[in-house]
Length: 561
Image 1: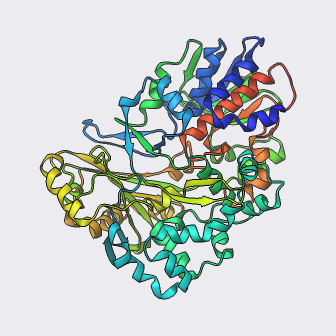
Image 2 (image 1 turned 60 degrees about the horizontal axis):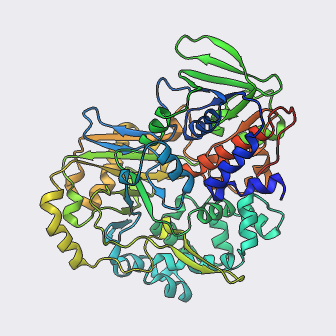
Image 3 (image 1 turned 120 degrees about the vertical axis):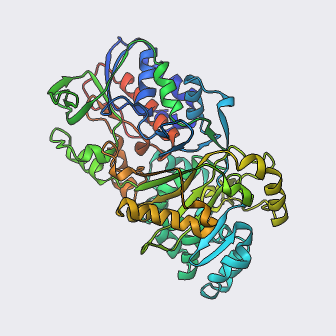
C-alpha cells in the first residue's frame, strides 16, 4: 500500500493515525514546529509533536483564548452558558473521544444530546403543530402540490419522502465507491457527477416536484443546506452513520482548555499574534503583534496552518502557488448564526419538552428564514428514543443506516403521544421549571443566517423572540440574556464551517490539502467531517504524520488525501 493510500485511512481510527505518526517520527531528529492558530486542530498537533520531544510554538490572534470555534458563552454571574458553535459529538467520533480523555474529560462529563424527541413543534407559515401532529396539520399544507407517489411517501413522515428521492443514488453507493468518495478520488464519473450537483439539483433530477421540494426544504430544513455539493454532503453523512450524540456538561470549551492545560513541555503559545502573510519559499511568516503593533518576520522549519480559508483568502499570498491560492479563495463557507436566550424558568418543560428541537419558518420582521430551536438536554428522560435516520440497501448488498439523521430525526420509532407528554409535564413541572437555563432560540445557516446578521440588534432580537413567541407564547418575551452570534462577523473565522459547494471537490480538493513546501494545512474545512470536531482532529493528525514523514526534505511533501 502506498503512503498516499495509507493517508486515506487515517480518519477511520485514531489509533491508526497515532501509529502512523509514531512510524513517521521514528529515527527523525527533534525539530521546531510553528503552528498558526490555537484551535482544536492546532492544540492536537502541538500535543502530539511535543509529546514526542519536538519544540512547538503556536501563534494565536486572540488575546488570551484557545479553542477557535469551540467557544462557550457564559454569563458574568456564571448562572447561564451556551455554545456559539459546536454543541454535539457523535458517539462514534473516536478522534474526539480520544482527545476528550487527553483533556481530562471522562464519561461523567458527557450526557446525551438528542436532535429530535418527537416532543417539539413545527411552525410552518401560520400553522403551529407538535411533531406528533405532522400528519394532521403539516402534511395537508403540501398535499395538493404533491404527486400521488409523493403523497404516499410523505403522508406519515417527511423523512420518508427524502428517502424516496435518495434511494437511487444510495443504491449505487457501493463499498468501493464509498471508499473512493471518502478518499477524495473522483475518477469514477458517477462520483464526479455527485460533486457537480447541489443537493437541490440532485433532488430535482431525481424527479421531486416543486411541492415536494418545498415540503422537504421547509419541514426538514434542508433548504438551508441544499446548495452544498451532493458529494460533500454524502461524505459528511458517511462519517457518522446512525450515531448517538453527546454533549459536554459545563461547556464545550472544557475540551480545548483542558488540552491546553495538559500540553507536554516544549509548547509555547503566543497570544495577540496576527499573521498577515505567508511566504513558503522564504520559510517566513509576517506577524503583527496586536499588543504593540510591531510587525516582524518569523522564520520556521515546519509550518502548520490551521486558519480558516476565508482568513487566509484576505492575505496577499504572493508567495503561494496559483493553484493553491485558487483553492483557498474558492472554498465556500457556510454562514452560521446562533441566538442564545437565557431564562429564569424552563417554561418549555411545562409543555413536556425536555430536549430535542422545534423547527420554524416564515416571515419575521419582513425577513424569512428557517431556524431550529434546541432545548437544554440536562433533563432528557432516559427512555426517550434516539433519532434513527434513514436506512438504504446498496446494490452490492450492504446496508447503510442512520443516513440524514440530523435532518429527518426519528423515523422508525413512535414518538410519545399527547398523553405521555401531559404525564411527563405533570411529573416534572414543579422540579424543573424553577431552574434557570439557556435556550438555543435560533440556529440558522446560509441565507437564514445572512438575513439575521443583516438586521440591527433590536430587529434581530424581535425576529428571534417573535418566532419563538409563535410557539411558546408570552413566556419567551423577556429573557435575562440574549447573545446574538454571527460567525461571518468574527474576524478570525469570517465564516461558519467549510462545507463545499458544487465542483470544489473535483476541481480544488487535492490542491486545497497539498502542502506548499514546508507549509502544511489542517482544519475541519480540510477533512471529510467538516463542521465537526472530528474533522479538525483527523485533518490535524494527518498533517502531523506528513510533516514528520517528509522532514529533512525540501520537496512538496506527500500527496493529497
